[in-house]
Figure 1 (tube, helix red, strand yellow):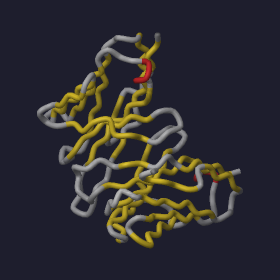
Figure 2: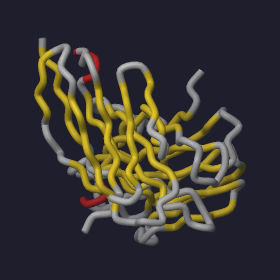
Figure 3: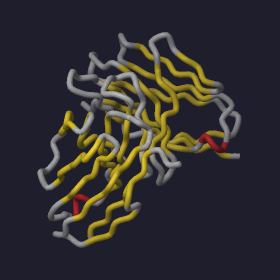
Figure 4: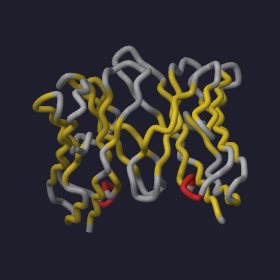
Length: 112
Length: 114
């Protein structure tokens, strides 16, 4: 079983749609969780951290369910510029270091 | 003012050669990383250094040797390049070695082995 699993998509949605991505992780001792965004042929960039209480940043809402080892990202009112690959990222913190484990990513294509 | 910069951006070379990729960060971070993103787009950590000390060394062939002359630099030297080494290599940095902080990535070095 992969450490972090995501539906690869692609998700093809019209502008203005609401879209949700899910992710599961296998290491129950994981300490921190993130969503990164990667545009084609670019570097990954932090979109948002994910907290147990859930958090929102504008049109983006992230949720964490530790009991089910499940993370979600909701994007409301999709824009063309949201088209990218969304990477679910888990940090199974170990005593000796900070190691990010990336999912394979979910491709989002927003169309006009 | 690039925060994490890598050179070169593109590297095309023949099998068997030795090459180096350089990385520098001007964020004042203590920890730096090398990641490899293969053709299937999986991004996997290779190495991590904290204040010039190696703290993470994943299962990577010993042809790959990282070197950190100071905490702002982490270079990657690759000996006897093989076809399977073709990938995009990303350098990253973070404030400390703890789990909370995000990592900032360079824009990648695209390595192609002929």
